[in-house]
Amino acid sequence: MADPTSPIPDPVAAWRSWISQSEQQWNALLNQAMGSDQYSQWMGRMMESYVTMQKNMAESMSRYLGALSMPTRTDILTLGDRLAMIEDRLAGIERILTAAGTSAAPIDGSTVAMRPPRTKQPPTETTPGGESRGT
Image (cartoon, rainbow, N blue to C red):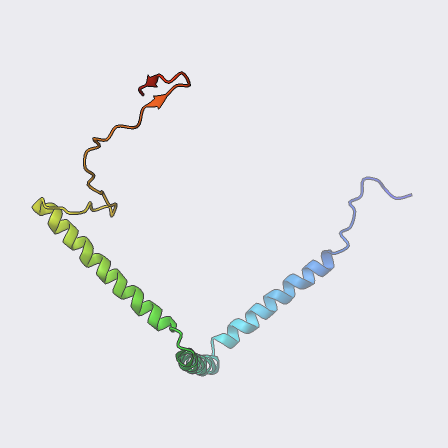
């Protein structure tokens, strides 16, 4: 019979140890490879080709959207910038008007309509007996 006080062996301990050692070896090998001049040159060439491909894709997409009469991302960004400039100028005008005391509109953007005083009274209700009842 087995000794009940002996520890139970871990069935995956050898596998965990092998994974850990493999990871350390791959890490050392890849760090050595990435530290070389050849890797740096290769990575530079890859980045250049990626940037060229991205530029060509943006140009072709711009031509495609232009043919469909649709705005491109650049068009939308330009429009957003112009709108922001207009909003800034409008806010400046509102500040000047407020400082001068001749504000036609509040700065918070809400509109206040000037209403004439209410002079008309609501109609009086009549009861079933014909008597007039005021509100």
